[in-house]
Length: 374
Ligand code: GLY
Image 1 (cartoon, rainbow, N blue to C red):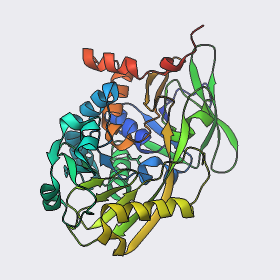
Image 2 (cartoon, rainbow, N blue to C red):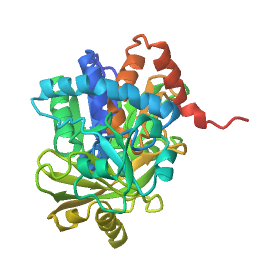
Image 3 (spheres, protein in one colour):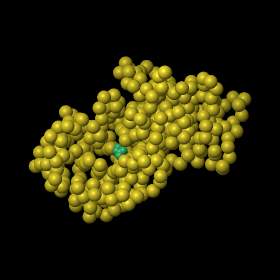
Image 4 (cartoon, rainbow, N blue to C red):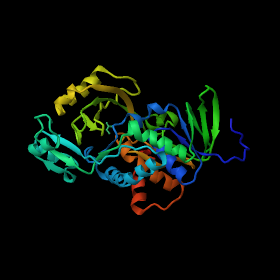
């Protein structure tokens, strides 16, 4: 247990070592703070599960979430460059665009982001994606969208960049409880990697617990939405755009690997593992989008848990106790929103000037939008 009278400066604690935890830790450490990441099992983080799409338009985001995503899209090239420089690892950022296919122009024009897209007729669609199934007659091309190779590259790069910035890691730590008095955060009670309960004291923490946030602090309204995924090895450049169909998407990496996602299973809660239904949904989706891909060798299959909130928007900013901030609940858009999340949280903690639009936007994502009003 940490000696309370110790004069050693307590680090700012990052609770959760997934993508959000790493992104926030990296940014705080770059600003000169002493940071320690407490993580239970990093391999289960949604950052390792996601397909890495940067696709607010294909996802049909609107309102404040779209604004937040646009700010993040603007930050991402420089953010990635910094991570690449500090880690020496390429993150696989590609502005490859997404194509959302439709069977009729009526359906296409109903897409929530249709005004941001470029309409393609069948001939143009075939030119963009030779081999796309014949049922798709038209499409929207969103050139603004892209991808990062999160699973193989970004997560490793961020971890290495954090180490380069002096971030400390404790893996195998399960946070059981937040310690606090009436007003202030005081630390955490944890089950450590040796199976012993201990207290880790600190004055400041950012809770980045993803789908598990609510197990750490039960008033946080986050719940899991399971997603099953798989990957195929296609010929290089067999797909040059992300193909984003209803219920299934195909994300082509530069080396020909195609990441396929994803089921969306709220009722599965934290039930681990692949299911026959989930896997056949993905196979059916591939067949309906891009039939020849059904013949490509299957590589991996995996699953994970998206952190969802009641309005499907993230929880960002200060939370209930002095010294505690939230960066969680990013649901389907964690990779897209990591850069802006880190930027805004660091501005809050380091008391840096937020622009008017940033502070107005942050207001929209605070926890108290779910507070019960008597
Ligand atoms: N971002 C896509 C998904 O969560 O499946």
